[in-house]
Length: 472
Image (cartoon, rainbow, N blue to C red; front, side, top):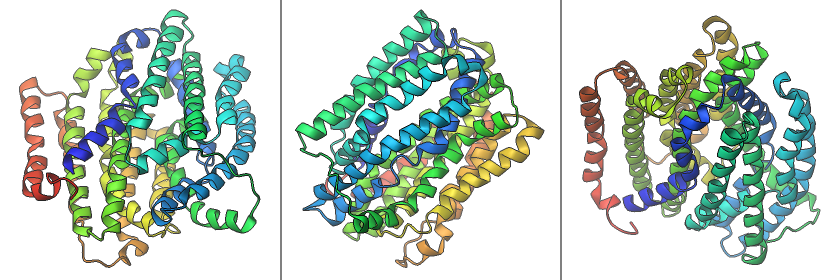
């Protein structure tokens, strides 16, 4: 199982983002041709888009996942109906998104307003939810290469377009807009042709109010839960804009946060890799195996995030050809360490979703998002844009560990203890330690990097009967 977790994590986490890793090698060229203003405009647009983007699927991916496990023999029909609902909905959604973009685009980008709007909404209007359906299908089938092979192809094209538009054509932030447009357009076409001609999966346009309301009754409670992702990841830049923080300072924060997002991608990849395995453990009632997988992944998270954070200063010095931007590595450290919440969050959320107890799931995620939002509103005017990294850390701590105390979760009485307080204190302790060591010498950093992997190695050795035996 351990080999499967690692291989699927590499496929879900590294392979789809291989183009972004390649982008790191041309970072000195890109950062030399971008300013804090470019990062600021990009960050503000992305933040405001997040206000709407969580409504694009109405939470209906949950119906796809649950019907796959609970209606194994005829789930495709349900998927086709969901496809039809979303195909119609996304036409209206994207028109609304276009109007919203026109209202919120920063003054510095108004000269490109219509170009930005059209490049943003056209791919989604043409192809709808095909990317989400395609990736969900092959994730649940545990065939990640079907997704990643296409993602890598699209990503490599995107890297070339990004380099050409930013470095050669000097287009600044518009280089990202154009590269995102081509990525969405090409990816949508590849996913649509596969769904249509290989899986024979095409939308059913049939108006059945009872069935629609039945689906939405389950899926819509997940929307506030998904909204928290926006509140946690992007609302800080929205708050900065509303508080009249300069676009340059927003750009500095957006740049540092971008490095933290690499670890966010890794955490999401872990979720995609172990999600089907954990659902299978629940189906087989192997609850102690479920817990052991969570513990192993948590220890792995601590080891990797600590190591990357420890060497953040050196990474920035190597890759960033901009003195102002390279000095922002302390913010990236806080963001990276904050994503250690993910395994504990998965331990709770996967179980609640599997048993379709989603009505109170919002109490975990939406409250975490509101914590981040409120703290930003009150603290940014006092301490400046840098404090947003700390508020994100606090909010994600709540996101990761509060679910264990939710009444809906505690009603799942099965005698398994996850020791959330222990992991919570370890999370905070490691963050303090790595922040104190961030400017130390190379020898101490190397020694600390080796030492941090000891707990993970010991746990795997102790639980080797679970992790090293195939099909356990």
